[in-house]
Image (cartoon, rainbow, N blue to C red; front, side):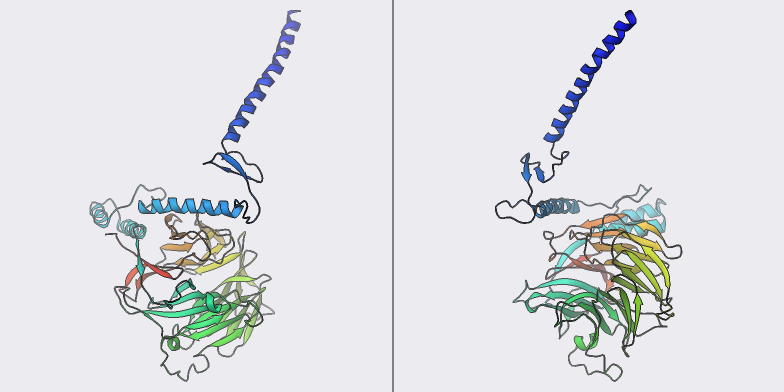
Length: 482
């Protein structure tokens, strides 16, 4: 009898315990609802400042301006303001597995003399410290008509290999075309002396790619691809002579009589372009088109079509081997051997990203390839084993063609994200060294374009970062801040 009474008492306690657990869960739900950051209600947005839920409408509405785009824009602006505050009090991030921090030049020299730093480590630390301490300076360069300062935006800055000349591509909205300027740096130690070309080249349509081309001499021409925007502006690739554009009084020589003023090569949907610096297949370039890469001889116009089965968004020629690398819309990086004819050609390699590949950069050791995609992933590939050996976190991209920049000494990587912030990584270990916040609220028109050099104006020039925002040009000098 005692055992049955004990069982009955235990069974009677179970419902009361369940009721207590349900009450406790109800209190937790109420707390979570009160903390808007932990509770998500579809179709509603919780404002932590007003402590209220607001209905989110798709698209813009004058009666209720609270939309998803408005919320994202507000969050981006708050993040930008926080980054601006952090950028004023920035420090060099520690290396992985290291205890070193930011040091000034004399302190680094003292620690090296005391044996606390090796020569290589101290030099690397000093360069990273100088990179973090770069301060901006606005340059006054009259590239455009001062009467219409708001009608242009910088789209690309492409220096030559000696960093004595610069291709400045901008969007000329008033005449619905793109404007190409040739800028030369006349001073070796300062950027105070910058000379604009006498002539400007206007091209209708949208320029999707730009690079230097060695047609009649080293980097004698500018090559760019134009995407069609109607029946009057078909897609094509164009070669323009830089010397003629920089000096209107120059008389064309006999070697480049047919290519001096410029030449068009019609290609269906030209997404990108690349010049071939390989001596075996010199004087030719490639255009990324719909489902193919089109290799064109600059003089004869002869074409070789490489079937990629997907649109080509990025291209790069290997200078040591006759191989063309193509990054496609479906996330593949295809290597094609140019020595094999079209019908018999096979793929030398295939690398895969999870999103469309938008930029390719070969290092000096061409066994390594940098690639970025439209999910913000930046990867360093080893082409010998066809594997990713390094990632670079923090990049922001969702759908844009955003280029990567690697310095000539291959120490740093620079990229502008879709949030308009400029980020810098260490190429060796993938550390994010610095984030330069956008000077303006993030919009497509205010996205910066950048170019970096260890010596602007040639050997012995000043190292630093050039940044074009809208119609303004900024200069970040590499060195200790005063």
